[in-house]
Length: 255
Image (cartoon, rainbow, N blue to C red; front, side, top):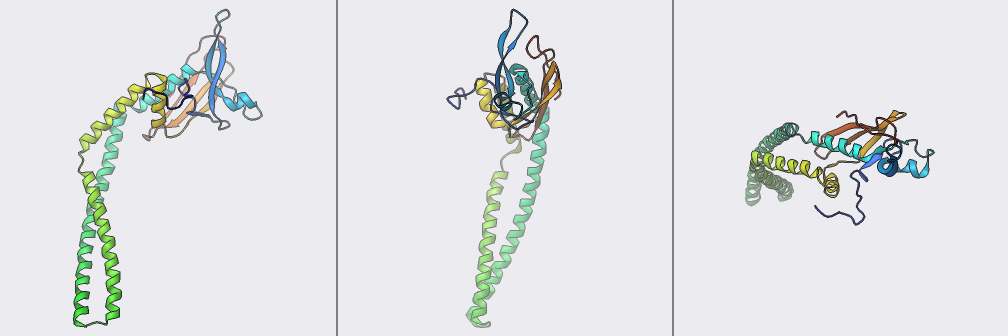
């Protein structure tokens, strides 16, 4: 986890994980001047790359937002989604669905076992009929073929239910404990170096985070929407609170 996945790995957290809601194009790094007169410096911002490179004819989204502001809000939103209380409720819901499926498997397995027993009884009677000549041989062979095919299918079903039963014997509390540990590892890793955080984002994001430009004039920023592979939505907003490049910046968040 300490090494970049790619040789040209970006040093910015969200590059490659975001897209512009206006044109669907990538959002990347744009260096902009920031700070008061006499102390201005180049600061990385997130901006629509299609708009920057190809102009307003392609995308009218000209919003540029300091990367540290959006990074902070996205990470906080993910952290909220990984909150222990939220996670516990999600685990309990998932385990309840698992228990329901296990019960359905048990009931279905009992039905398969009963039907398999009935098929075997019919096969035995057909073999007896073939032996004593009480039924035409052609009719018996046709019925034998059908019953054997049904027995094979039922046997395969029974074997599958057996494998499911072994999975079901895993203790629920062990599953929950293991998942909580993994969630804790994810939350901790996201707050560390960018390289590790980017690798973790690859694992937990279900799709790219969509950035929608909001605000007007000097107060512009991005509203973001995304989904984690944990099936928990993230959302929020990051804003410039003065000018784009000439003064201090702040944030306004809605998660």
